[in-house]
Every structure is written in structure tokens, then in C-alpha cells.
Image 1 (cartoon, rainbow, N blue to C red):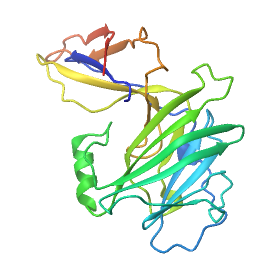
Image 2 (image 1 turned 180 degrees about the vertical axis):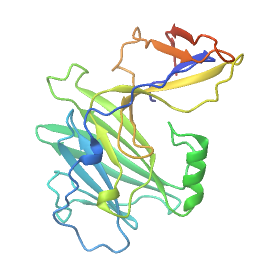
Image 3 (image 1 turned 135 degrees about the horizontal axis):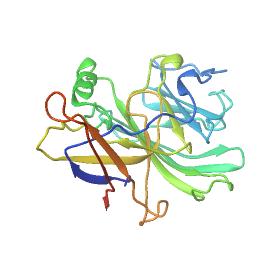
Image 4 (image 1 turned 90 degrees about the horizontal axis):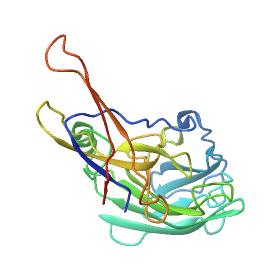
Length: 255
């Protein structure tokens, strides 16, 4: 379960969801690819505070190619993972990835039909994405990431990112950043109106590049139960010339 902070308020301020590195400028070189059976679809997963380790994922029909050692060569033994399940919902059990001295485990990719639960996006954006190409699948990944011994966040954390779409070209591929700096993100965009309350839901994790790529962490055993965020609220006052309304709150509820 991802970390959710729930608050009721008629006010809101955007959270800082800037990445620790500029993922839009990351190197997208693929050195060697297999002979695909279908039109390949690409996604790039990066690891570590500076996103130095890069693992390419390529969907090829009912198979997933995984650059397990991050060397840019997808033709090596053990890098083709067969799908489980039917076309409507396919699951790829990747298992372990080596990242230098670190081992990331329980890596699973789920491929599903277009899904309206792309968190952090407006209903209009999600509706457009689902209607543009109803046959194009969306994906979700889950993985247990091992942090370095110098990382004060603990030895491991489970990350989940999705729903997002693979791209037809490496240069357009979504980028997911695992084990990077943490920040907070709104899970949805509620409509705020004076005199009415709205439930704000936040998650903790690392931003990616592309819709649906924010990597949320599972909070149990990672973030202490006594840790709560402080949210600064800032909205214009009612009518012209009225002072802005500001307030701070500290959401306490998790789910």
C-alpha cells in the first residue's frame, strides 16, 4: 500500500514534485536489441539517487525484454520474460535485478487495459489518454529496491509506479526513477471551491518523466508512524481586493 495522507480542506497548494535529476535529458542509448516478433514498445527504469543505473524494458507482443545488468544489450541470456495470463491482463515476473553490489527483487510488471487510475493527473488528461487508443495497454510496476548502506532511509523500500504507457521509440520512452530523492505528490486533483471541503490525498516517492511514472513507496516499516507532513495552504480571497487566505495543516490519517 502506498503512503496516503488525507486532509479535508477548501484550500490547496501544489507540492514540490521536481526530480533530483533532469530525466528528460537522460542518455537513451540502446546498444543491442533482439529481433522482435512484434512492434516493440519501450520504457526506461533508472536506479539510485542520480539515476546512474539504467535498465531498459521492451515489450514485444507477449514477451518482455529486460536489460538485467544495465549494459544496454537486450540479447543476453535470461533477458526475455514470457507473459503470464491473457491479453487483457498480462503479468511479467522479472524477479531480481543486479545494480552493482545491490540486488533489487520481486520485480513485476502488469500490463492491463487503459485504466482511469493514473494518479496525479486531471480527469480530462486521463480521459483523453484512454480514448486516444483504447487498444494500447497501460502498465504498472512493483519492485523491492535495495538502498546503499549510506542511505539513511533504510536498507529496502517497495516502489510502485503506474499506470503509464510504453512508447514506440526509445527517445520517447517514459522514465521511472527508483531509489531517488523522495518528495510528495497529490494523487488526484480535486476541485476546490469556497465554502466547500475537499479531500486531499498525497503520496511519497520519486517523480519520473511522463504521465503515470511517479514511483510511490510503501510506507510500512519505512516512514515512522509519528512522521506527518505540514501542508501550506494558499488561495485568493473572495472577490476583488480581498487578502489571500493562507493556513497550515498537518494531515494525520494514513490508509
